[in-house]
Length: 116
Image 1: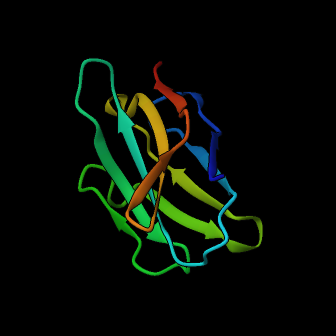
Image 2: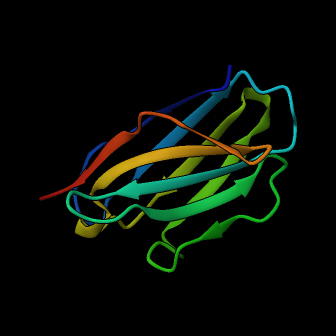
């Protein structure tokens, strides 16, 4: 059974940094896609960043480009999202999504709050 567990959220000041992690287990395939999505209170779900399990094609939403970096640790089946220069509008619940054989698996998410 595929399991996705996010961690690393918390409180940060504007201009600060946080590093989110997405630990994946229960996958036997080496070919899948990982995405980070976020949802702020009262707002629609927003795709943030994505990468393939082999490291191909890191992509970013325009709203985070140049500030966020996605990477994968294949030895530990973990994907990280390094978030720098955080802004108030980055406050949201961040979730990791795994796409495998056209099915999506989500974790419960980790809260990020950007506040003074």
